[in-house]
Image 1 (cartoon, rainbow, N blue to C red):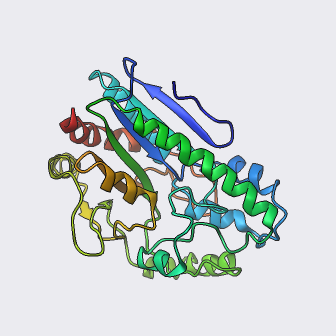
Image 2: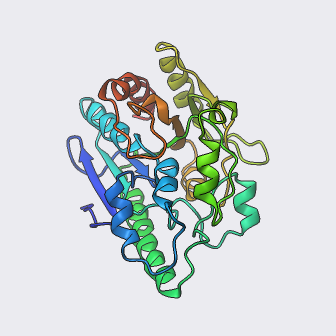
Length: 292
């Protein structure tokens, strides 16, 4: 039986019971100010001033609410879902990264590092790695316990615009400059939704019928779905493991955060609009049901 681990992962189960048919993994699910403050208070490394700003900009606000809503809707169709919401802020350690990947790997994947550069004390590294290992172990347990028809949705949200800022000690100052009212609109606008499925060699690992159904469902609400326009599917991420190990039965999707936040506020805990979530749920449910 899957169970939550306090301060590591929240497990939300929906459906008729038994082994889950679907795991919705939200590895960047620490979206509350309290998630950041709780772990920051345990660290001894000197953190950049105002680092909570980076936390709010870089966490997947709206993904937990959307995941739970999708699970509730799927339950009406007899589908059991386990929603795994990571509670470890990626501001310190990223639970969707391979910890042995090199800086060059992360750059090739267009993603932030696994362990952030401001984590300098050995004690902090050990603490964070222990939390990471517990989260990854539970995720693997959940996936290994899927029903015979089981599938995986890795669910993320991203900021509306692609802001090019280095992840270093000056991250907060540079983010504030990048989000200044006169500057922010100049950054490239990201797709409304993006399936992260193409490897760097161009191979598309997405389940074609699920993607086609999702694209059609979104089009009915005037939303569009891109295919790896923002990032490649890269081996430096643990999403790669899910997709490659379960061909045709796993998908990774990014949702633009302003489609869920009400309003979008980059440097604060965001309120998520129920109506905005409800707008997306039918398209996801229709697509995911192609697996079942």
